[in-house]
Structure formats: C-alpha cells, structure tokens
Length: 337
Ligand code: CP
Image (tube, rainbow, N blue to C red):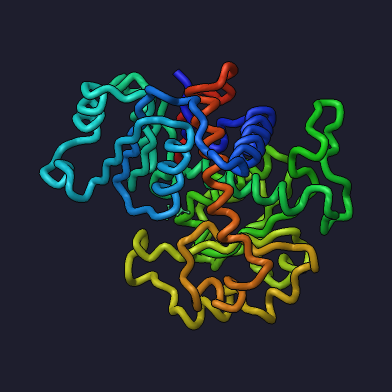
C-alpha cells in the first residue's frame, strides 16, 4: 500500500515526477472542462481533526477535478467529541468503504499510525500532523519555486539542474537558496520544506528567535543563522512562517511588536532581497506580525499562487497514488521528530 506521510520519504525522482505531473494537471486546468475521469468511482475521505482552510478546500477541489466521490469529515460536530478514538473512526470509514484517506491531525505521527495500523486498508495522505510534517505543502512550495526561479538566475550564480546525467536538469532546485524565517520550532511546514528542498538540491537557511529553534536542528540538512538581513540579501526566496500561538504555552508568546521588529518582513527589509527573489508564506498569515500587509499584497509575494498550485500538486499526488500506472511514492518512514 502506498502512502504520503513525510516529505523525507520522497526521493528526488519521486518529487520531480510529482512536480512534472502537477505541471500536466495545471496544463489540463486551462481547458474549458477542467474535470478528468481518472478517479471516477473512487471514494476519498478528508479526515480533518484540526482546522484548515487552504489544505481542506484544495484537496476537495483536487479530488473533484479527478471525478472522485468525496466524504468530508471534521472532528468538530463528529463523535470525536464523545470520546471516539482514531482507531474507531478509521474502522468506521473502512466499514463504509473508502479508497484513500487524507488526514490532518493535531498529534504528530497520527497519519503514520493510520497508515501502518491495519485499521483501514487504503492509501493515507498526510495533510499536516502536529509539528511533524505537511508534505503536500512542501510539494506545492517546490512547484511554485520551480516555476518562479528555475531558468531565471540564482543568488549563488550557479546554473540550475546540475544533474543532467539523471535527466533532472531544470526540473529540480539545484543551487537555489531558500531562507525560512520564524517559528521553526512548531512548524511542520519548515520541517517538510527543509527535507524536500534539500532532496531537490536547494540550500536552506533557517532564521528564528533562539526560543523557537528546535532541539537537534544541527542534524537537519540546512544552515541556521540569527542574521536575518544577511540571509535575505543572499537568497532566491524567503518563506515566512506564522507564529503558532495555539501550540505555545501563553508564557512563551513573543510580543507582537518585538517579534515584528526583529523577525517580521516589512517593505524596507524586503528591499534587501535580490531583485528576482520571491516572498512566500504557507498561510494563514498574521498580517502585521510576521509579514506586513504591504509585503503580503506586493507582486513579489506568491501566497495566492501557492494556493492555486496546491490544487495541481494534490491532483498529482492523488493521481499517482490512486490512478496512475506507476505509483511513485514510497513506504512511510517512522520518523516523527
Ligand atoms: N497552509 C496550510 O496548511 O493552511 P491551512 O491550515 O489553512 O490548511
């Protein structure tokens, strides 16, 4: 059974295949009739135990464009409020009959548990688990970066796609520099992006307040610095993270003003970026804290483009897991740091 649990499980060939397939999906979306019959007769359940706007809507749009039957489950209003476990919820879905499960859960490792427990015999796609992983977010970010940056020069001056022998030239992110800024400690987006961007050949630098740097970050395939302005001047893209107050003890909340001054992206700071560099944010944004409204609404900010690309990437993942002739995704690893 094939699943997508972690960006770390993807090889470069897997990731490039997903991005190339997403390009095909984007091309098809330009047709007057956007729907494909690929998943006709297949039922997909979106199992959301944690709030979401973009990911939930985007998966539903992707599933419908592939003609799947869609069941939407949100924990609010379900029997989870009466104490029902993930196991019993999964067995309920298995009894009803679903062909794939997209799961978002507040507990890191819940998608892995679902994929490996035997409670349900269906591919599992992780739509974000706790502070662990959000692989389709990393894929849509890589898709956006590839479209925006590849073939357009680099802060390092290096050519793109130095892997011509493996047929990846211009299709990965070799030599690109991405700076990720903010609450890395609580960010599954940061973890997923560090894994996937590294796999795709990019160089990643993390900038975070000292209290929001994870223990063990020295083992991640990236650099860590506290010099935000220096990191901005040498990158091709900056990815701003939301401060996840819902995962923090109130005593550790940074003050909004101080955080914005030290780690927020405003127009003067954005001006330090190379001319070609883009500003990314996974959403939801807290305008005025990690990003000013002026930056969020600027043409350099790809946040809306990222959302649009998310539909193509999720169509590609569903197609390759459920409908394509050559499933590309790998067995899940047990890493749930
Ligand atoms: N980027 C992201 O996961 O957004 P949502 O929480 O709205 O799904």
